[in-house]
Image (cartoon, rainbow, N blue to C red; front, side, top):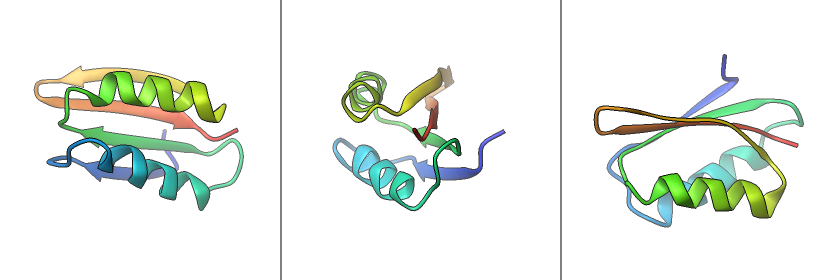
Length: 74
């Protein structure tokens, strides 16, 4: 269960990443951010983002045209 939900549907790169970065900044370590996006590039973007920032990508899934991610702040 996520602590916070970020709806980035309809936004294209780099906006989903920028909004996620801002949301994570206001969260404490161990909290989980769920992101919902429609940009197909967000799959690779969030994997790279977590790799670079040290946050943990808990899940990445697709429901129709919606891409869902859960990121745990480290």
